[in-house]
Image 1 (tube, rainbow, N blue to C red):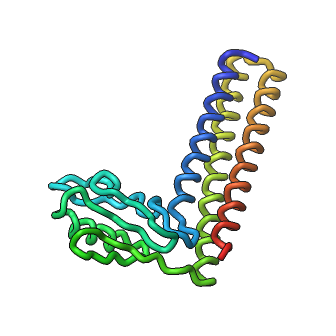
Image 2 (image 1 turned 135 degrees about the vertical axis):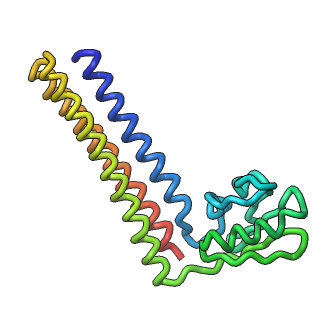
Image 3 (image 1 turned 90 degrees about the horizontal axis):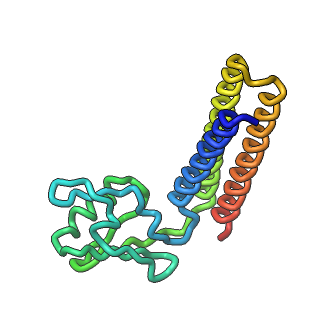
Length: 187
């Protein structure tokens, strides 16, 4: 196989790998009933005029599976943190006691669990689309290379390699979604 074809395959694999990483990140944001600091990822606080991630202005920990404690490094950040959590609209209500912000994570209802499973499946399907787009990109590049002199046999071999990668990463998506579903539905 030529160097160009190998580079094309490696590029497609990197795109597929990035799709999986993105899915893993998105799935951590879907809560499964127990409190985790990841539930607050993506929340930004106004820190002296700069939009700053919550984790960079406070300590976030989970003393038990049903609550999250947020301890700002500066006392005057309590109110902006509280506002940011409410504005994020993630279904959690912060309780400010003047020293820390406590969030009680309510147990999931059956209906909410079903919604979260659907949300996870949508994320999985979006990732599979991204993986198929990487396959299409690679196959298009290989076709261009064939027109520029790559032999038909080498082009077909490279396409088979790309298809194997597509199958491998699609299988990883299925495994991740299945594990998340199980996690969400476990009471």
